[in-house]
Image 1 (cartoon, rainbow, N blue to C red):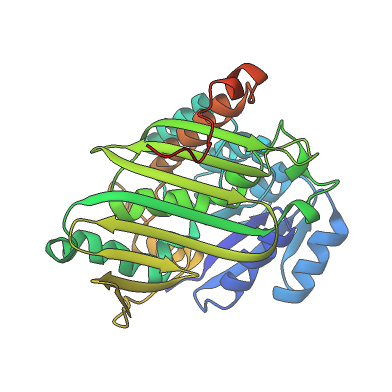
Image 2: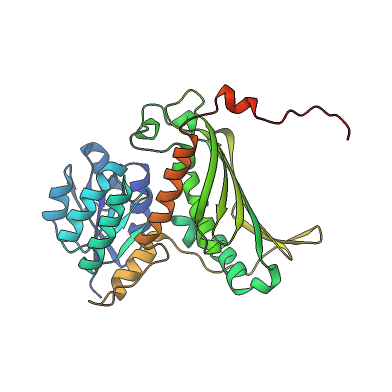
Length: 339
């Protein structure tokens, strides 16, 4: 088998994660690292693939080096143009989320992908991890054990706000805040595990002095009449992730990426986990299996970017007006009075 030649566009923290995974895959040759910061690209090249080229312009990286695929880890506003260039070059693409800045751009990329007949995947990593694949199996293949899903609770927190000053994550023209950056992974996991999408949302949020949303609370209705409540706390002092699926006969719990089945006030760990992988390994699997006219799909095909974009946009619209004094005046007062 010929090695799969891959380029990395964007050599920051996320680019390094992808480079580390790909460098560990014997089927892959990392051919070029590209970043406007040449020193950053060179450091990544020296660490993972000393024979690779270094470029500061995406056009040079994509057009001046023999490649089979590209991993795009650049800021979101660059994604659309870079994916288009990659397709024009006939390359397979793994792109970080969000896939693009607007819904129109995402739809355009999906249309181009159909014409290009190339592997096109978005890096939503939780879909590939063993706990989330196992949770999907539980609710999809062992549904009779749980019964109908009645409610979903999501709680996510970490020390995020304290780290974003001066970065693109603190720019509302680029990012959507904590719920849209880190929190989008958990919402996509809910969509993936349940097979449902959001229909309506109601949200409140606090920017905590930042330019983007830091602490956001969302109530949502998913398809099939399932209610969801989600809390995203981006200025906590620890990291935690809980996703709970409350069902008719029992509960399925994801707690810090461990899976539990709860029934009759007893909570038992699920130990027969499905094997996990990574978006990068699955991307290479798809390229290796590719045949013209029969393009393999990964667990996170680019089409899954649309419901995630719609969720993010709807939450931002809901929090856009903030809570006014008039809104608060309509709240029910808690008095402690007896009936």
